[in-house]
Image 1: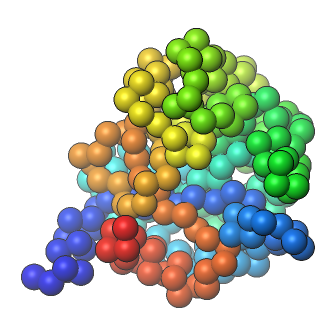
Image 2: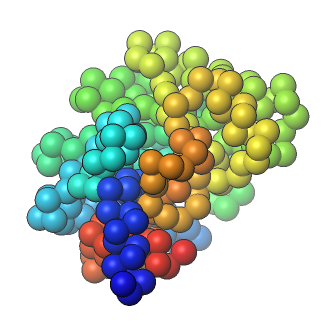
Image 3: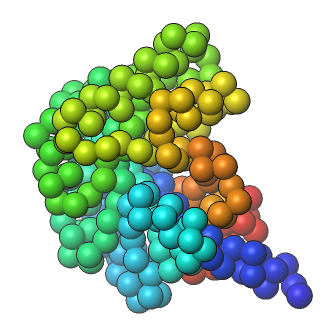
Length: 249
């Protein structure tokens, strides 16, 4: 069996977790153009998933299927940070295709901007409380991405607990729904951070480690596949329909 077929056999029922940030055109001169996927491209990507017989889902649905061993036709769509363009641009596209998604929200910036990137000169508007409720009311999921988007592995224990627990509590109060899914800012985590996420009550947590999630993976250290705004549709199809993400680690 060649490498490709072996990878397909191993990851055929795994869960692809796609990472997005801003669903908007990249502003002129931005130093981070790859974090932006245009609405037109996002629409094309969703159409391709449907053509491939795949469906975009939330982390809750995706993780249930992963545990059951039948996630091979699902893609968990995750959007980091909580940008306003997620509800304005991504939500209508998701609705047209009958897809779910999970938005990981930085709670101290609700209604503000992405303060952690201010030094780079790339401010982006974040969803307000009302917009987050709209996102949730449309059947889309909300997860936590901490209070302030820090490097969690650099925090003292008290600050770490506050970032993980207080963000979850605020989001649950905002929507009245459980918040069970978490995303590590910058992908930074270690054993203490993972244990803190477990103690805070999260069911899953996602990283920046590239790959396809398997049932045997620690649910609090799940890999993802970054959907880079600079890539064409052919690379997207490879990530969606083949073990390419594992072969290109």
